[in-house]
Image (cartoon, rainbow, N blue to C red; front, side, top):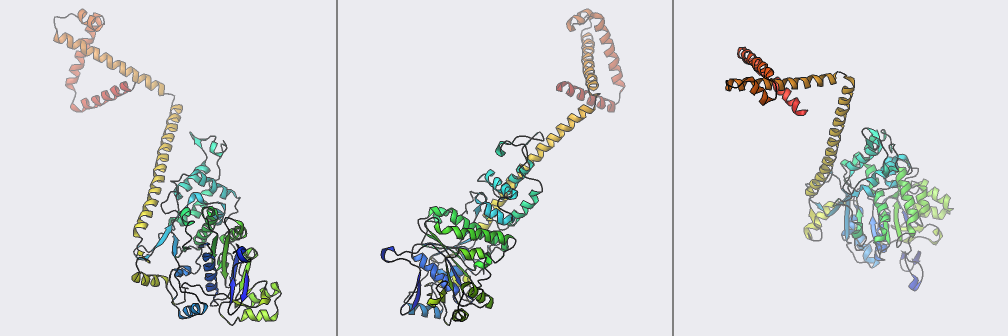
Length: 554
């Protein structure tokens, strides 16, 4: 990289001479107070990398103003157009694709620009993402439990499937209420975690019930990295305007960064990652979830230079001393514009051993977009040109500007409502919830049946008179059979008066005396029946039915 001075002063990202000229992978930091042209400089360097064949990913929008989305328009500000004319540049509108993590906060009844509302797969999350959510070290038991659960679930499982996979691991594998060897867990007969982990883990995942971009692997809205990595013609601008939870916003940025690195092999182009206001993601001495976010980002920035076909990053910040020191150490080029804070100037002056002239220069550059190159401060300042596309001005509103362009050119700037998408995602959530509800209802039914079985076995063990009751019922069955024989004897004699009791006994295989006695006894029964009232008869009929049912069960 070199600063050249001819009629105008400008920055060249190329290194080498002749055919050996190329733009090396590097991590660039641009410093400058608000209004100094810092964002314009970042946008120009991004444009230069895009022209050189880089695929551009803008993964943060700290002000929720969709600043890089303005690249899809031609510049309108007079100062911008005048500067481009003097620099010999033609105004240009870039091709831009907008992305936003899906959330139920989308204004579904309002017409919006074409936005890819996307989801991540739960199965794609790794230690860094879970570590940030759980605010836990990557090798902790909590993170191991989450990683193992992600491995266990299917492509059809989302958040509900994940939480219940965790629950099953904590419970352990059981048969008849006892822990048994689980060969998915090395044949151990012990749970993978403790029950106290469940409420805590559920709390980490709860925000995604509203910001529902963490879904099953086969979600139709999952980011298609194979297609994205082939598309060098567009700027890929990721925003998260309608996500309110700062932790979830940061989580989406970290996941994007890690997935870009993970799927880099799908592209034939070097990659440029743009992170505006890096100090908000990687502040000096971060705390809470920001500490885990900063750790992951600085590790990524340290290692991406040599990965894939080359990966560069363009970062900017208003304040130098607010940036995490490890992030600063990963930077290969720093351009210093006009600074506002005395502490910032003093810190840099002390670290770089600046002369008084340099200190005064960064306190008052005199020209917009004028910068010093760290390490070459003695070479003087140089101007970074403006980008040829539109830049977000203070008075601009992206949605108003887009709507205006839609009226002029609806094919190039289409608008649509996303009510149908919200309904589809509501259905996906409901289907996943119903699937788990059925699983729970089945488990409850099985548990109830098991409890009833145990209770019955306990009652049988505690009731030694049960065999006597069975014998008594068996006697009742025998008595019932005797009553039938008595009835047969009586009816045969009544219907065939000439038939002897010897003949009757021979037919029923009993002796004549027994046949005669049974007939007489049944005659007495009939006489008693005739004297009973209706209520007595009903009671006896019911008792008779019970006896017959018991006989059938036997």
